[in-house]
Amino acid sequence: MGGRKWVKGVLTGLAGAATGVACAFPTGLMVIPIADILGHGEVLYLYGFVGNERNIDKGYLHSHGVEIGLADRFEVGFDNDLRGATTLNAKVLLLDDKKDGRYALSFGLLNLGDRSGDMYLVGRYNLSPTCRLHAGYMQTGDNRLIAGADGPVPWKRMADCTWSVEHISGEGSQTWFSLSVPVKQVPGLSAMVGVGFPGQKATGIQHSLVVSYGFRI
Image (cartoon, rainbow, N blue to C red; front, side, top):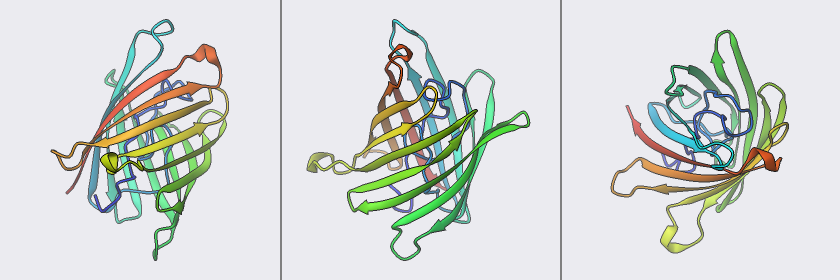
């Protein structure tokens, strides 16, 4: 996937995360989009589910989706919640460091469907070879700030794995901690597990698993 090992799949939809409604989502961390895009002809298929504390909700939200990179500048995709609802998303790379790849800035639309949609603007800056910072603005019903960081796990035995931490502000704010693990036996396949802590305790601590498979067409 063009060396983009930090471009991981998100759970397709912030249902159970910050907004409480399913929405199409681009590549990102677990719950926030990032500035990086898929390369031309790169495809990412994702399947995931999210659950809550059993005393709050015993059910799980399942969803799957596809993202496609175009011209090393655009990314488009769709998501389906396995209940009949499908939404679209799109992202464009506005600015990037072509020399060292140290920074990038992207604008995107998500939750597109039924003449409605939301938008976001997000940037990425490589603080060091072992840590990348993400920050931006998201409009999903109300105005939200998003921020996060990710990088390779520093332990030698888990050098191919990546950690991430992220936060979405506003009503229903949440902070997520995640770990992405590649399946070495199947190139392009990875699994990402995460735990989300709400700003309001009554919302419940959530957990999620996203399996993604990337390939080039």
